[in-house]
Length: 516
Ligand code: PAF
Image 1 (spheres, rainbow, N blue to C red):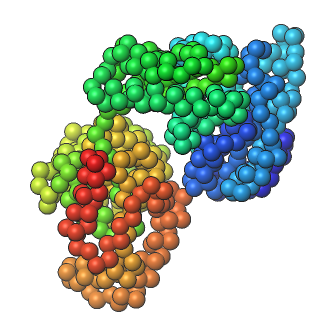
Image 2 (image 1 turned 60 degrees about the horizontal axis):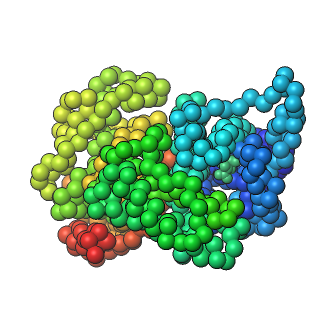
C-alpha cells in the first residue's frame, strides 16, 4: 500500500498503475470505523484500484465547530487500510490541497468554491452549519478531479451530503458514478460515526434512541401513515424518552431534492439531528413503499432464465427479462441500419429508446416486449438478433443505459430479475437474492442434452466442461458486469434438482423471508 501526502505522488502513481484499470475513491476524514470499512470493502470488490482519501477539511467546519478536536489517527487508519487491501491512502495537508487560499484575507486570492443549490444547503444540517455543504462540495470536487475515479463511495448516513454530491455530479457532468452505501450500525442500533468517540458512557447508552425513534416512524409509515406532522411527532415522542438529548431537528424531506414534504408520495427521508452535551449526532431512514424485488444471479447454464420466469409467474411478480431488453435494443440497432462497431451512434440511439415489458399471462411464454411503441416480442428472437446480441450487450454505453431503465422498474418493485450482477449492482437492496449455480459437470451434461434435443451434433462432455470453465472464468473476471455472488445471497446448487424443485425452493424462501 502507498501513502501519498502530495498531489504529485498521487498523480505519478495513477499515471503508472492506472492504465486499463478501474479506480475507486472513498473520501473520508479519517478516524475510520466499520461504516467506512463497508465502503472500502465494496469499493475493493468493484474496482481494481482503491484509493482512500483522509483529509479533515477545514472548509467544512465553522469557527465554533470541532475542527481542532476532530479525531486524527493516521497511523491506526493506515494499518487498518492495509489489512483490507486499500492500494493508496491520499492524506494531503490543507496547504497541499488549498495552497495559501484559506489563510488569505486578500480578496484577490480567494478560493474558488462550489456552490450547491441553496434549497439543498439551507435545510436540515445546513440550518445550523452555514457554509458546511459548500465546503464539502468544494473538497469533493477537488478530490474527484485529482483522482478521476470511475466510482466514488459515500455513506447514506450523511444523506444530505449524498444528495448534494449526486446533484453536483449530475449538474456538472462529472464523469464518475456515485455509489451510495447503506448505514452501518452497532448492535444497539447506533449508527457508526467518528464523533461517537466523544460520547460519555451514559450518553452512549442513550444514543440508540435515534434509531429506535426512526424505526417508530417507519412502523407508522408501514402502517399506512403518510402525513408529515404525525410521522415527525412519532419520532419526536420516542426521542423524548431519554434524558440528556437536545433535539436540533426532526424533518421529512424528499431524499433526492431535499424539499420538505407534507405527505410521503413515493419516497421520504426522515432525518434527525440531536445533541448529547456538545456532541452532535445525525441519523436517518428512507421511507419507501415498493413491492419486493427478487434478484437471481449465477453462472451460465445453471437454469436461471426458466426458473426466473416460473418464479415470477408463481409469485405474481413481473419477470424483468433483462435478456429481452438487450435483444430489443439489438433489434432497434438493426432496424436503424447502424454499423455494429459504430458505438457512438448506438449510444445515441439507445439513450433515446423506450423499452416496455408486460407479463405474458402464461408461465410457458416469455414476457411481451415493446420498443418505442412497437411490439417486438417475436422479432427479437430472430437469428440476426441472436447472433449480435452479445456484442451489443458488451458495449458499456448500452449496459449503462439499460441498467438505468431496469432500475426505474426497480423503483416500483414487484420484479424478479436474473443476470450476473443483479444482486450486487443493479438491485443491491433486493429483498431476496439467490445465487443459482451447478457443478461444471452437471451444466455440461445439460448442455449436451440440449444440443442433442436440437439435433446439433454430438459434442463430448469433456469439451463442454472445458468450454464452461472458460466461460465462467471470462464471466467472473470481465470488467463490465462481472459475475459475482452478493454477500447476502442464498446459494442454491441445482445439481440433481429439477426445474420445478428449484422454483419451489425459491418461492418458499420468498414466502419465509417476506411473510414470516
Ligand atoms: O463525509 C465525510 O467524511 C466528509 O464530509 C467528506 C465527504 C470526506 C468531505 O470532506
